[in-house]
Length: 320
Ligand code: 13P
Ligand code: SF4
Image (cartoon, rainbow, N blue to C red; front, side, top):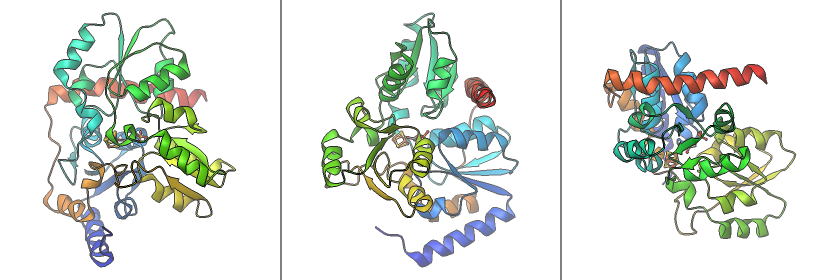
């Protein structure tokens, strides 16, 4: 359902006034609804958002994204107040990796370095050696010697793609994102027949047969950058629908066709990301809850592999 323009504008104005008064910052993921993206101080992918969370001087962080993202912001800013519009905004991928089973997985692979995708809970991060995002997964893996055995969790599709790109043989956890997992080669081929000029761009959380057809594979930010720098004028987009807002804004003259998960549903809208609404955004800042609250010991254990990721990413950027 389309949001009511008047009430959207009123909530946006009220939120912005409160944000100023409370010296808050609004960080939003690209999968958030357009009206939230449009008023954010920073819109980005998981890596960009954690870098922003590390740098911000604001006293309050309003995090428009899912729980593991807001939790990461809290881990990086234990002394700050981190608010999330809807505490129920979880993630099927993070949920596919329960801490007790993950511990058994780690214990069953002695001598392996444990690399975890940021889409996991703080408990999983605390048991990992280093975190990665889809932006830096290849570089993080390649920062270890080729002979180093590695376990990778929780996304098996991203892990398999990184194995392919790097020639490694990481042991993969069997998790996946319900939004990307559902995209099929059938619907892509159908779109390709309708729009033969269009390039297929895909997020590495998609399954291998989808990735095998792609002209370009990358994180949310990488896909966005590619659509701006590519000479192609049309793109079939295999990822979550929220990204289209910025893609169209940055490239109004180009055409974008989102891969339908299924002709009868809007399943490639992440149901968790879309739990955040502009009304909830305003209310969370007004009431200063829901707030991300965490055990201090868990914060310090989970911070280490995130900081290691940020440090490796920074080093790679300097070398490039
Ligand atoms: P990125 O934002 O890192 O591309 O990840 C996509 C995603 O699924 C976030 O939940
Ligand atoms: Fe999790 Fe997938 Fe939603 Fe991202 S898009 S938050 S990985 S369920």
